[in-house]
Length: 361
Image (cartoon, rainbow, N blue to C red; front, side, top):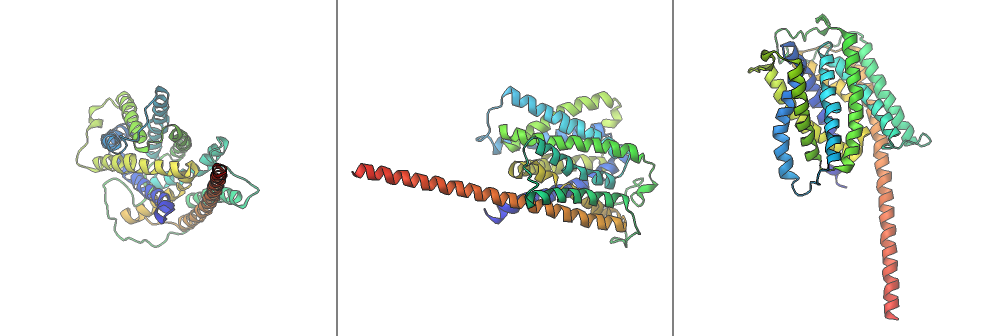
């Protein structure tokens, strides 16, 4: 395998976490400026559908499998539970807390995804082997780092940026604690949405086995989500003014998330799940905590605590442990495949030699 083929999934998942971090901050600002999360989810997936459908049609028109009714039903419910319901729950929780807290709670994704993947036999873990113990240890270290980041403050570190690059009236980014927010309620709601997201990652991997056309699958998910979230928004948002977007941060949030998240990040994540499995994709989510904090520091001149910096280092160490274990698994898998191929070639050669000898006689 080439260098690009080997490390492309790693670069893709890091890029996805950077994109998600910016999304959390933009969405928080947009909702503070009056954007309804019901309308937001509907608009962003309408935009993503308009982009993903023609792209999937052009690029996968020759390799797309016929769709059965059963697969369509599975994709419909995958979109309903994993995106429509999950995102409305997540953004409802984000309205009561901060992007940094939402990023910290995303660190539970590797643990729950790991458990689901093992139960469904999508991920093999042998406690007796060093690789298995390292993957378990790395997952625990990532979660521990997130807890340190969230609950240990320490003294404030020196700011890297003196003035915020983006200033929004009423956003209060200079002091998140000054905002009147129900932290417990928001945290519990976001935690619920993250558990649902874990199931979405795992079951997405199962559907890939039946329908491996990634672009087409993502296009169908976006289309179903557009329909479902539009109906849901019409039920909960009957005020016409909630549907109006001007040339402001609300429009920026919709366009950014529709293109960068629902189209690009979804497809990149689907590629990684298909190539490396659901755990590989999930283990990068603790980085969301780091990217959200870094984005806040650069964009809004937010100052980090000592505990935040130490927690970020712990997260990166835990991520390295799990990725090492996954890399060793891939190496062992390739060795087995090469050994099996070599045996097949040897058997074929022996059969061919025997046939030639018989013909010669």
